[in-house]
Amino acid sequence: MENSMMAVQLHEFGAPDVLRYEEVPKPELAPGAVRVRVHAAGLNPPDWYLRDGYRSLPPEWQPHPSFPLILGSDISGIIETVADDVTAFRPGDAVYGMVRFPENVMEGSRAYAEYICAPQSDLAPKPAGVDHVHAAGAPMSLLTAWQFLIELGHDEPNPFQPFRHRPLPLEGKTVLVNGAGGGVGHLAVQLAKWKGAHVIAVASGRNEPLMREFGVDQFIDHTRTPAADIVRDADLVLDAVGGKETRRFLRTLKRGGALFPVFPMGFDGQAEAERLGITVSSTQVRSNGGQLAEAGRLLDDGTLRIVVDSTFPLAEAAQAHSRAAQGGIQGKIVLTVA
Image (cartoon, rainbow, N blue to C red; front, top):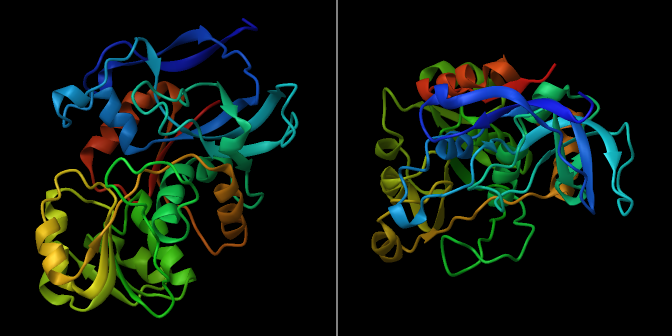
């Protein structure tokens, strides 16, 4: 039907098999928004956290959304129609973006669908040299790496700390990226090299050939040697894995250095960091079409590359989530929309 579409809906929290591929109404166009015919949608950790009900959070922080909901925030596609007040885009434009994040983090941003309505400010022109699958794999991971390392790009309150996150100048600095083979990590490595840093990549051994392609200066296979046992006097650690274990990287840093955990929940080393003269800082990634337009030029000219771990048809979103649950993802998992 003309006013319906296929989408992947969540009617209850649970394992990947709770995801249902079914017919739903097409989204209605809102002021300041465009409707995009989705060609591909990228998977990100908040997708499977929400599918599972964010069970790792304290009960008072867990979501209580109205079901059904549609997961996903990252898309690449073609604009079908635009609201009367939209000036940045026209029907037929190819775009990519992270939609309404973190505003919709607890109720889904509706990317696992054939169509999505998105604020024009969340979108950027899709890089011409990148296909829809690779473009859809970029937004959240690329914006996370960009806002941690290059430019924060907003003045919103920081949910993780009382002070504003501030990226550091990277040229000539030693930067260690933990989780370098994953979605955020493989882009953080490339951005740090682009900015002239000496980059140490930490990942499992299967990622070494990829890291060498990216030009890293040192590769550490964490399954053989803990990076915290051999690295000293780094200027910055970006820990794309995060959590309680982030604390071990404090001893890899020089006094005056910085530790940036992408997932800061569970970090308990603040007192030790202060004693060592190390700044610990994190931030919440936010939608930003302007930053994606800037970063898109680096995707277009080959400075940055999106690695795709695997692709699944939209109807097989449950299998895609099962792949994510297996771990060891190199780059991104992407849903293709026929």
